[in-house]
Length: 199
Image 1 (cartoon, rainbow, N blue to C red):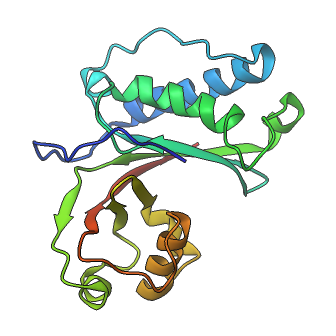
Image 2: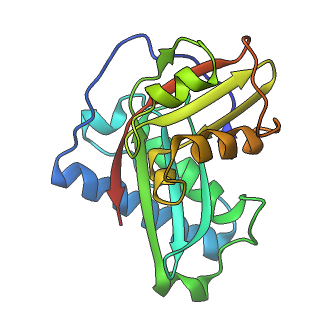
């Protein structure tokens, strides 16, 4: 599930976080998930002091219970500071992912998570599906497809379960509501990488 307001980032940036910054982000997830299971609403912690975490960046937060997916929501938009996006999507992943019931307090001892911070979106020329399959870097590229009001996005971690370009792209089209064998010259394509913080 994603926030559908988006645009291609106008300025390239490298993704790099110190150990202290990574720990700050992990603590934000833990605090938000804990209060979400207690109060059933989003309670924002105090903003961090690090300028890096105040920078506007897109992210996804993925929750696991006993290493099984329990929620994943994020955005490819850059309209909010990273720390706030991490808080928002920690809350949404814990309580608003329609594939799952809201996270319960008795599950917290078994919780692990990933924060995936997105690089800028890089436009890929639409020269047909076969050209895209040759262009994709297996295990590295995240992919966003858009056409009209439809869109779908896969993080690079999806390569762990969909290990070939054809299965990756077909599953992404299915996720977006297209037929697996559908293609259109009007489809727009973007790839990106992620910096993954595990907690």
